[in-house]
Image (cartoon, rainbow, N blue to C red; front, side, top):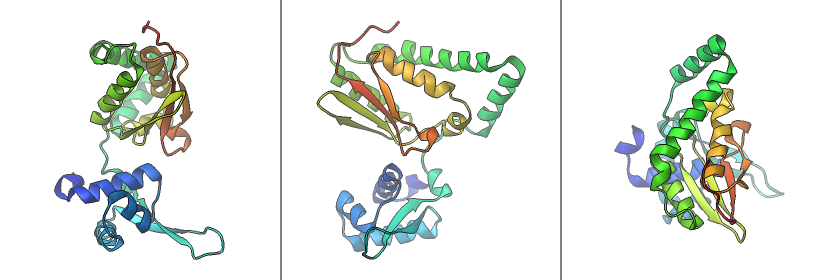
Length: 215
């Protein structure tokens, strides 16, 4: 894959652009800790390869802002667990056995996750450790997760969805993902943003309340 052969700096730039939906040279320079000239050199290289492109955005009366964004080719830099064949198989299943079977399939996927990985999460009474452990698991699966903590909750933000093609057509995986977090953390978990609806991330709000045992 592309990011295996390029230096680590280019991957960090791509991750920042992916998570923000578009950033300027100055913003990238500030976040990554190299000069704007250095950032431009990396972006020129990425642009020549068709990985990034730039667009203009007006703000106020000043000069327009130049933002760098990922191209369709750039999106493929991030790993995808399933391809078009998986979506086609789900369509066939829906046509043959109906929506209930598709829903059952993703429910089984959720239950397998709980059986295989749920027990490896830290003690259920320490919410911060469990949320961090979950984020680490998701990052290992290519979800590009970022955690934020507020006074009353944790925000788990997923900037990349390895099954985005499936989620665009079938709501079942997203429905059961929300149920999974409610079973692992607590029943009050909410999804604030949703990539399938056009948001930059799937953001889950995990309240700091007493945890419930998975059912």
